[in-house]
Amino acid sequence: MPSNAHSLIGLNPDACTSCMICVRECPVWCIDLASHTHEVTEEGARRPKVVHVLDEFTIDFGACMYCGICVDVCPFDALAWSNETDQSAHSASGLVHGIDQLVKWFPASGS
Amino acid sequence: MKQVPVEAWAAELAACRDAGYDVLDMIAGVDRSEWIEVIASVMRTSDAACELVATRLDSDHVIASITDVYAGASWYERELAEMFGVRIAGAHDERPLLRRTDEGAPILLKSTVLGARVLTPWPGDADASDDAKANRRRQRAVGVAEDWLVSDGGSHE
Image (tube, rainbow over all chains, first blue to last red; front, top):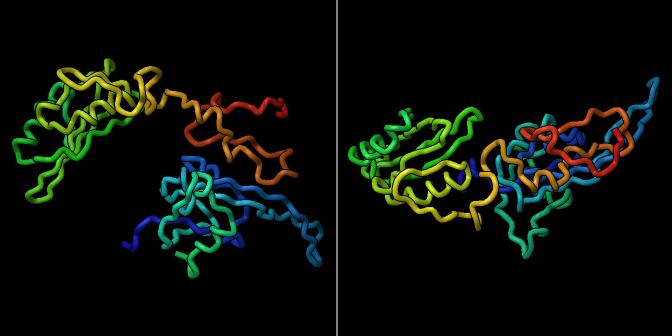
């Protein structure tokens, strides 16, 4: 496969801050994200810090047109192209992949 | 890219063919909001040279058919007619290409509201955090007109 081939997109959930930029920039609306906020009290801090915790992140590869805008706009490099080959499924819903699958496609060294 | 007036469209492509550009790669329409641009890409198989020919349509959106220059142009002309509402002058195939009928607004014009975009909730509209939605600014999808978004029935703003 050529090195610049667009195949799949992987997610690093630890880098994702649930900022929603990818969801809003996606031209085909194929990314869905759900999160909740969580207060963390750090030693010596005056106020507790509010952090977003990622609950769900799905990409519908049946709708995705592999434009890579989500990969480009992510400020935290939480999305990256994967060299895995395209997946097939028996139904359209089988092309919707969540965190469990997307994390496996996130390249080990980034890209 | 060679820019030609719309009257010279068919003649320019005939000149391309005579210059050895034997393959019509594609014809594409672009809605530039104020006008519609039509771009043809032609190729010469002997040396893999490519040429782009572009024209800007007048407000009546008519362009001459080039099916007598490149036989394969018919598919793209049907596409232009169906997706951009361009009228093709001269002998051409008038059957709809992908839609079953030619009813409704041409779907690739920016002014056309796409039903699915109205009916589908925009994933970006949902606030990332369920418990912090109070003071977040309401956002809308890139390139989607303000009145396209339908509210989910509640008047919570």
